[in-house]
Image 1 (cartoon, rainbow, N blue to C red):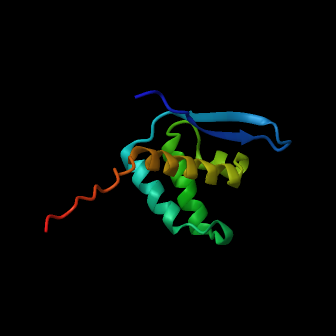
Image 2 (cartoon, rainbow, N blue to C red; image 1 turned 90 degrees about the vertical axis):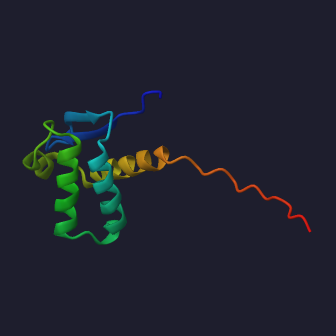
Image 3 (tube, rainbow, N blue to C red; image 1 turned 180 degrees about the vertical axis):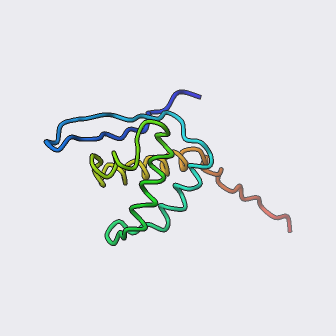
Length: 109
């Protein structure tokens, strides 16, 4: 299987300069399941504090050891965090091949 594009999150300084970039090439199965559940439950137009905390927790797990909750609070862009979630879900969709079309057979009379 060819290597896929890494998932990336950029953290920024107060002057909007790149502070740090976090990357992850693979997505563990457990994180994938959490991401799919969160994606289904999330309404980006009406995000509450619990939604943001759940997204932050997922991001911390994805980039294990690369980013902390405090760093996300101070340096992450919410749009990029949602993009990370969407990238994970897209990877999940890419793992499930399209089923072959059903073959119709003629019935003998």
